[in-house]
Image (tube, rainbow, N blue to C red; front, top):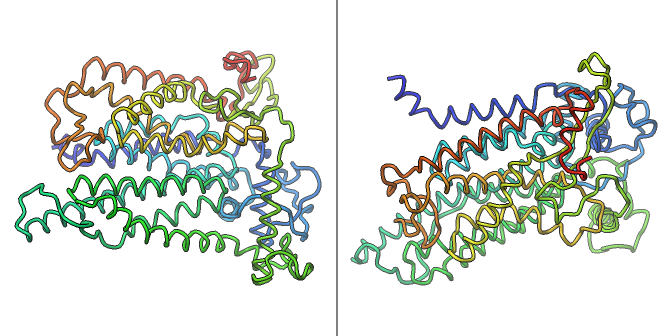
Amino acid sequence: MIVETLWRWRVALMAVGVGLLAAMMRFVGLGYPTTLVFDEVFYARGAYSLVTLGFEGDWGGDNQDFAAGDYSELSTEGDYVVHPLVGKMLIGLGIQLFGPTPFGWRFMGALLGTVTVVIVALLARHLLRSTVFGAVAGLLLAVEGVHVVLSRSALLDIYLTFFVVAGFALLIVDRAHARSRLLASADALRTQAGLPPGATLPGLGPRTGVRWWRLAAIVALSLSVSVKWSGLWFMAIFLVLSVVWDLADRRAAGVERWFAGAFARAVPAFLVTVAVLPAVYLASWLPWFRSEQSYGRRWAEDNPGEGLTWLPESLRSLVHYHQQMWEFHRTLDEPHNYESNPLLWLVQWRPTAFHFDDAPEAACGAERCVSAIHSLGHPLIWWAGVAVLLFALWRVLRRRDLLAATLVVGVLAGWLPWLPYSHRTIFTFYTVAIAPFMVLLLVWGLSRIARPDRLGWWQADSPGQPHGTGEPDASRAIRGSWSRRGSVLVGAYVAAVLLLAGYFAPLWLGTPIPFEYWQLHMWLPSWV
């Protein structure tokens, strides 16, 4: 009876389990360090300003005065900031809940980072038809170094990651619902027309109704753009991917004009996107519109006849402000100790040091103790993930594997757009938005080791699956479809990942350790 109950609740137990591990990695000691780390100096103070003034005021004085509780240097003059407001508003929500403390300004990042882990676990469970591999995906992301560090820091990238993953998950749900309706409608039309099962349907195929889940995905992805503009790449690529899914599903449903049918259904989605994205983005700037002291708020009034004169003055001012922001990002090329070339991001060649300070001797019992926080990706996850990425690309090119393509797209959407900007001052921690998709891709590779093709789990021509998708079909899996040797290898790999996570955890959490022990973690000269 107990076993049956546990089996019935296995998905919920899996989600709770990985969520607890993720929360432990993200919330324990969240208030340490008590100082501002790395770019928290911009975003924590900006969030406090939004909470107290209603807009982002300019700060003077020492950067760490804020962390010490001195807010006297906040002025009512608008600050020139170069990112949208949603991420800072979420940081501000944590400040409203817990005060302007390190725990307060980091709380929402840790919360949404934990939620992201649970979403990824459920995504893997759905895509791979396996609660076991859903748990593996959750475990891997829960202990992935870049994701842990960014979840524990008041930077914008963890909020970007959350909305990107949420949007992707909503598109997966949309596909499942739309495909179910499509196949059911196609069968009903065949019955009405007296056609045999599987017969080709003439025309564009049946409608699938209003796609509410896709609308929700568009809103979530629009919010990602409202955190950082790089969310636009994810949004564009994922929405194109959803059209590719429609193409495959209409072809699988036996629709004669499957390409034209999917394209016709994509037009309304495109029109909705071009309406929703600007609406959500402009709404995110409401604090700027409402505050007369916001930076550049009165530019149009002070510069009559300049800019886009056909726009209202407030929008003309905002457009000019965005032109300034774009120019800043385009020309940002100041030398930095931790800037990195995106060509090497996926192997974590040059991680960013967020914090490094000496700690009291009593903190670790050594002659010299240090507290260090490095946004260093888990080596076993990223290095193995690159190998799986190459295999997945081969599967896409040679086998037209749609599932592999789906996961590859998530990685490439967060990586390739940065390559033309390798001359700019950019950092490896931007890969936090890639990490969930790298984990999904890696777990897909692990599942193929544990359930190889020869044992019948992965069916290229499963009923209801597009030809050549490579998606698993549990209904056709045979007894013994798990390879004993492959399962042992996967289990050993996961155990090694967890053990190594324990080894690197002090560098993610800032735990005081002996200086010599810190040196042992610097496996590559570029990590120092």
